[in-house]
Amino acid sequence: MFQRESLINDLKLHPCAIYFTKVNGEKRAMHCTLMQEHLPPSTNMQVLEEAHKEPKNQDVIAVWDLQIKAWRSFRVDSVESAEIIDGY
Image (cartoon, rainbow, N blue to C red; front, side):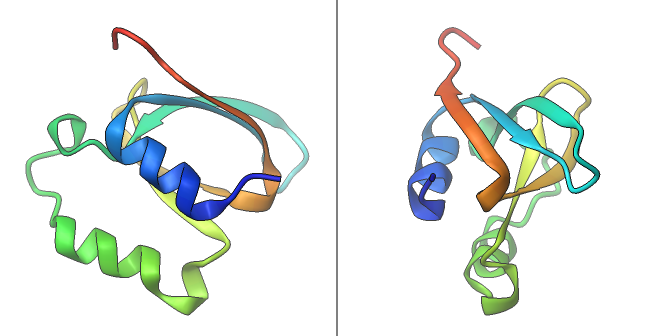
């Protein structure tokens, strides 16, 4: 099982490939990050940080999907594996 804070820390420092099972049972691989240089300019980092600290959001991590260029999220308990993407 993956630790939420560990995933968030990795995502803040690197682009990552997150492999998880969606709520509908579908398997998904997502290249994503929380690195500020990859996020849209309109991203308010303070609001994002606070949202990740909210008790109601502890099961979910919101991330920037690098392939479709949009905000997506995944449930921490659905993560099967995660890896840092080198050279992105």
